[in-house]
Image (tube, rainbow, N blue to C red):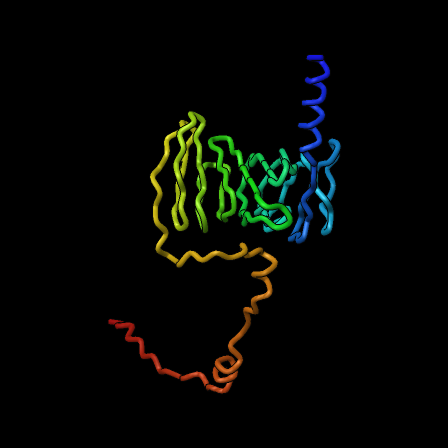
Length: 227
């Protein structure tokens, strides 16, 4: 009877867990993914499951959509998708950031709740509906909401919107620094592809004016001073 109860409990737990995937919605430059031990170029529209490795090159990035959340894998970054699974009404996503940095805008869509965790060599950051940027070397920039930032000793620090917190290899936590350079507003992170749509060109009016103007000729007298 005890054995039957254990089996039923295991079946109930398994039934409540549903593996899901993330969709690649944008690619910039050279991005590779590793599946079944083989590296290949990532493709827009491709579905990435738990266990997949992602590697971005110079000036390259990948944008991954998981339910209502958006994860931007920035240039020169390497990460592993540890978990993308639905647990009841909660969608849980976990990634390991080996090097580089990512931006995340975490929010629920089809599911009622969402949990997102980023583990780096020095710390772990987790959120339930917020956005920010985290680097493998322990720097976390909060953009919206509140992050729980945990060092390897289990010490927890809250990172609020506009705060920057860093944790070093020894677990030392640098207090939050408020960013005054620009106002922090809730928004979807800007991708490199979005930035490329901004036209940067020549000021035609100024350019034509410069062409019409004749160069000014100036006589320069040099006194050598021979004796």
